[in-house]
Amino acid sequence: MSRLQAEHLYKVFGRRPDDAVEKLRHGTDREELRAKGTTAAVIDASFTVEPGQIFVVMGLSGSGKSTLLRMLNGLSEPTAGQVLFDGQDLTKLSARELREVRSKKISMVFQHFALFPHRSVLENAAYGLEVQGLPRAEREKRALEALELAGLKGWEKSWPDELSGGMQQRVGLARALATDADLLLMDESFSALDPLIRRDMQDQLLELQKRLKKTIVFITHDLNEAMRLGDQIAVMRDGRIVQIGTSEDILVTPANDYVAAFTQDVDRSRVLTAGAIMADPDKDFVMADAPATVTEDTPIIELFTPCSTSGVAVAVTGADGKLVGVVPRARLLAVLGEPAPSEPQDAVVPAQQAKDNGGKNVGKVSSGA
Image (cartoon, rainbow, N blue to C red; front, side):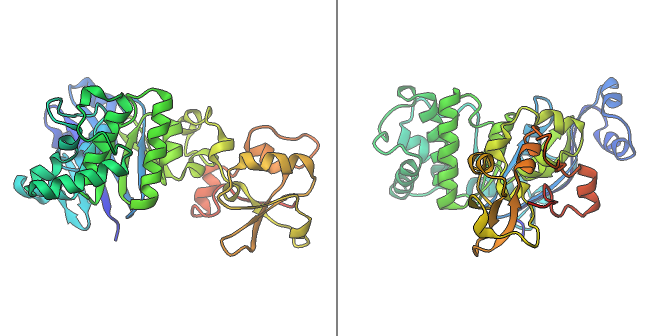
């Protein structure tokens, strides 16, 4: 069962929101509604998040991503649609039942830390457990464990104003972890940090995720952050989700010109993997002749040297060590937008072709070595 499901969510602000939803369903433009004093913040959003997955919602300011997040834990009531958490429809719960779910099963990490200045680091980390009514000894024990996970061991008695921005955000993360919630909602959690600290927090989150396997919905306006963190990424524009897929899907087969323009400045060499761009090997391909053998998860930046020193394609193997594909030099250059004139051009699979193929083999083409 999916951990979280959003089904046809709408959020409309202004007069007669139910009528506005019906108009949207029948093709009325968002701008037409706005001209009449009604704002459609989220329009027909549907997606699923699997247990242990980081699901990133990415979009520019005003795209509706934060409003969508607030509907996932009931802070904002949908105008229409459902939110299912472990099969339970959160939109049907009473206010008391919703508070119970939020206090024990769903934690939120905010952009601006939201720490209590008059409480110590330990007391801040234990706050969610205090809300749950746990005895002091139990909540301090769990808060200490969470602070250690977040890299703050030894800072328990400090005050928030004694910490750097990155450390304050770690306290917020520890507070969310201490409750042992099944779902973490992170709203632009790292965007207030400077670039170096931000990357450090991304590293911290990925390391924690390897150990804890939490289910996370992460909101960001930063494409590189989305590509780095997301197992699945939903791209929003003007209240609508315009594409959902892996970072490879979105880079290699953008759903429309908007997504293509959005992703044009991404460093593909560090995001795409050998498995995403590999081609089918020729029947006479000999793995022993390859200049290198890599796994499907290998970033393509590591293919530059072997591809530049040999005319033979790099071999790609699966988890069992068996050959699953090859990366010819021409294919690597084509994906990076630098085709080699003297070699066959391997075109990126267009989005429409990917749809026609049922979404299979996205980013892979059949090509010789």
